[in-house]
Image (cartoon, rainbow, N blue to C red; front, top):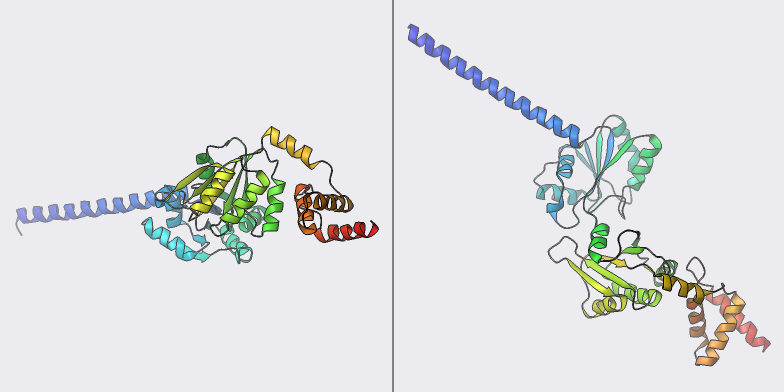
Length: 339
């Protein structure tokens, strides 16, 4: 072998060695970068509650993407939905996925927390929005607190805050009341408790109950209370209807809204609170309610059943409920028997 050939072989070997070294360095840099991401976004031995998009995938944070990709366990309200979300985000979930919903969260919480005590990062996600807010998650948070295990949040989209911000109503003080009760009686009782609430009130409601709920809002709060109805927030057909309760009720009747709904109701004014206090007066006894029902029936030629209902609605108890109608009706019969 000539001296030139030996030199060429050495050059080729040097080039190959340099390439391998660069490749190794690149792989080490990638590993270091991944470790950096994991340490920054995926805390070990921690439960992370992460908000997911409520309609627009573009609202997903970088932190959510990294958590989905690198968390040891993803506890999802619906495993199919979280897999679909990961696909849309172009993220591959590397950890295990487990169903974590209303029917099994108490049973599964301790098992998941056992893994956290061994160093796992457990990511808890709901179908949309923040876990624990009308979604699973509260059980594992409570158990983690009891067991002294770290819990944190990866914040993000919120239908409550979006609707509140877009309503045009005061945002400095507000209360969130979740879904309105399904049954009319329970709904009326709940709304009466909030009749003199001075803060802005936020509710969730479904499309198949919105018409009945608007009727109840009108009856309890009156026609002129300002409100907003938000639907399909962050989605293509997002819409905010603003006006008085009477105006929004009319719009619901003429153009029934579709999609997910959030109702934002203005708080009671000082005048409304004073008027309600004057109107309510002292709590009526069963006998007093019966006597007033008799008088109302005679004065306005009402059926006794309707007169009793009217009197009880006008004089709710402090907790928003009303006197027992059967008891008042029996008292009416007793009073009429004495006359």
